[in-house]
Image (cartoon, rainbow, N blue to C red; front, top):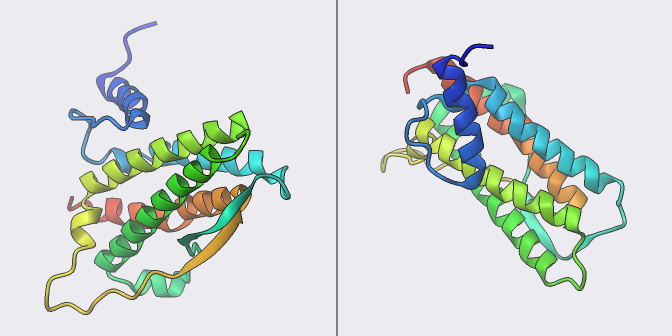
Length: 192
């Protein structure tokens, strides 16, 4: 068996370093445009959702947590400028990161946090940090900042969740929905 091609090796190395939250300096700037990268995070989110689905009554949050609404009006989405899409995704990712961190804090304060749940919370935090870094390289943060004369973006629609199952469902749906739609469009534009 020969040595893997350089791009494949670079992708594998990047996938190993990203979950650690480390900047991947030599990573191609459009790593998020490789569908395998985003699919890996979506799979992890879906696994977390599936693990917690079996416990619909179990681990409840001791308080409601605000998360981004993941519903997508495809007609409206396609009519949005890429800057508006970037703003919605960036705000949603920020709110989702805060929600997962709040879930982690609530779990840490519980008497006996389930080990498997803690593992999925940790993976989600790592994944969100990595996705934030990848989106920053793609230019989402810059696009989400409107020029002073622009119309302010519509406020982000939110909802509240009261169980870890619902929290992970929103996480999974956000990645499979708005994040995937935005990255697909931004990568197709190819001007990054």
